[in-house]
Amino acid sequence: MQPKVSVIIPVYNTASYLRDTVDSIRNQTLHEIEIIILNDGSTDNSLDIIKEYAALDNRIQYYSQPNQGIAVTRTNALKYTNGRYLYFIDSDDILEDKRALQECFELCENEKLDFVCFDAIQKQEIEKQNSNIPNYTRGDKIENKIWNGKDLLEYELIHKLLRTPVWLYFINRSFLTAFFKRFIPGIIHEDNSYVIQIHLNAKCVRYISKSYITRRVRQNSIMTNKFSMRNIEGYTAGCIEIQDLIQNHPEWKTVIDLYLHNTLNDVIWAGHRMTFLEKVETFCRFHRLSLNKYITLRNWVVFWLKRK
Image 1: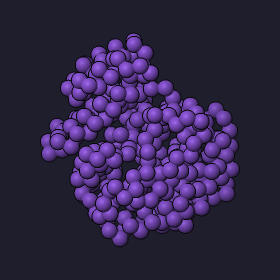
Image 2: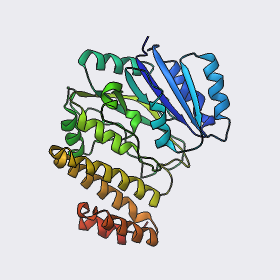
Image 3: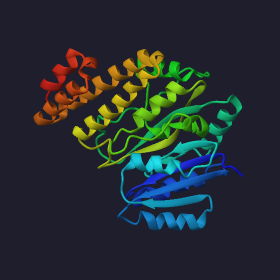
């Protein structure tokens, strides 16, 4: 029988957290699932833990590859999926609500939805919250109704409510595979292009005002590391891919321009913490990619003059 949901877990050196993550999926009330674990060349004992769990639960399929980064890992993991719906979770997070997959599946089935999105709470493992990390709890700020995906995206952008981590989205697999090819390899913030594409292509979606997932905020993660050129490269690569969508869909231009304006101004503001040479490189990159037109004068001033 076709699994109802394929849960994808990319793994790289998260042995300390992996058991909690896998247990949170195995203990879901929706049993008709497959769990796809792709080990991205871990050098700790993550693979041993994966093998242990695969022996305990025949719903788990595991694969290994040389280290290629999370974007390639997610793309490769998609090839092994058979479920009607897809859910990505990172290997250090916890799907805290045991009914999460059940509720998302039933809602999507009953209302013929392309995807549902929801919220997360944070579990702090560092003393001071890093300013790069947004609040993933939006409460009742998004109306409880069936939305057109583009309309929801526009509303989220206007009200600063868009959240782009893939683990906040439960998605119809046949809907996704009709247009989505791959996560951009070799970058961070690869979620952004994925989330924008599913919004723009979706006809029927819902927001669930629940925090199903617990997001760990820990040292040496992408979101807690110092903002650097790696962030700039990831954001700009995603923005260029999103901007290119306008060529085939001119009707998306207004909302894509709004996304680029919001995102790139936030990026430039955050960039004030970089070194002077990184700032010069960033300015040149924005000019070369013709992205500087989206940045306000105020944020350029902050970028160059604000102290850390």
